[in-house]
Image (cartoon, rainbow, N blue to C red; front, side, top):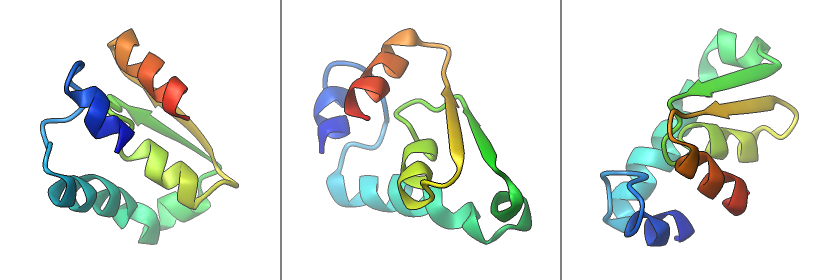
Length: 84
């Protein structure tokens, strides 16, 4: 909810409808967990994270892994840090 609220002021995602947001961001973010590469990785790097997807949902679901989120816009990283 907070990401959608802040998205009104800073472009974090093009998807603004809540149900579509959940499907396209949260559910889609978790689709990689069945891959061997993901299961074996200890550190995951999310390059071009935007609003924190897929990095944040994966970090919530897999707290034992280390996640590094990178974006070219510092204002996005600042918001992600505040929300985390």
